[in-house]
Length: 292
Ligand SMILES: Cc1cc2nc3c(=O)[nH]c(=O)nc-3n(C[C@H](O)[C@H](O)[C@H](O)COP(=O)(O)OP(=O)(O)OC[C@H]3O[C@@H](n4cnc5c(N)ncnc54)[C@H](O)[C@@H]3O)c2cc1C
Image 1 (cartoon, rainbow, N blue to C red):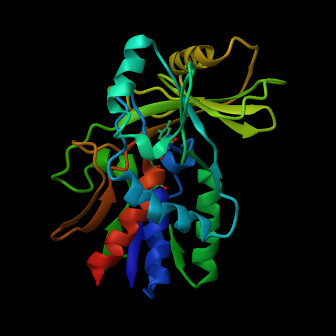
Image 2: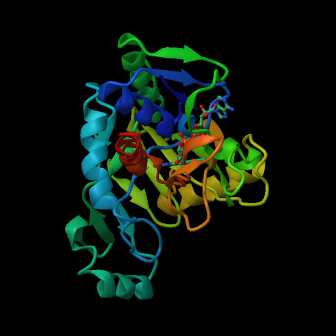
């Protein structure tokens, strides 16, 4: 029996993958909810200001997409991403990187570069679907660890608590708004110093803030103001805020996710950072391989 502690993106993926590989699996989740419950689910192969492809994104996504699709529901929404230019210097920077990011270019216009292979995962629905499959196939579910062979997938709360003593982290709090903008009709994901994701029914998810110093959870007025400024970068239209959430991204130094073993403690999958959707299924498979 393998015990998976934490059922966010990391725990959900590895629990299902182990179960599908024939292991008996017990999930332990304290029900507090982690960043996977608030994540916007954005998948952006070339994120950031410097047009750098995400680390081994192609390899990770070749594992992740079929995994999400295997849950049988429409959880991943494929949507082109328009990375808007900041200015001419930014555009010149892109031209220097054009060859490197060629696999993801759908179009280049005076507005910006349109990336393919982007989109968003409905994270809360993914967690629901994963839990359903896990329980249907006879998985056990508890709210406190029982012991034995353990895999800790406890996200930022585990890093802050130092579940694994030798891991330094620089986790970052983030806030997101969901806004209603009637009649706008923007259907692409927009990205420039923040992002906006159309999620249907005149609703858009907008974010996100980064705060490394004040990790206490919960949405703040300051966070809301910052996200509203991101939104104003994309449209001057009137909007209504319908939801405001906050969470903490689990970021380990070097910003790479890890699968690690510590004597006397067990395995850990953590450090998914701001790209949990891309990396969680790949880390889960790596875990399955390492248990063989
Ligand atoms: C504002 C914001 C926006 C984001 N947007 C995106 C995005 O667009 N795209 C993207 O890919 N990523 C995004 N992320 C990052 C993403 O949320 C994380 O990479 C990912 O969710 C981390 O998953 P996890 O399973 O490691 O941790 P978590 O989701 O935090 O899950 C940990 C789980 O463990 C449980 N737990 C903790 N301790 C214990 C314990 N001792 N016993 C039992 N259970 C325990 C918690 O309750 C929780 O269910 C965003 C994050 C934030 C904060």
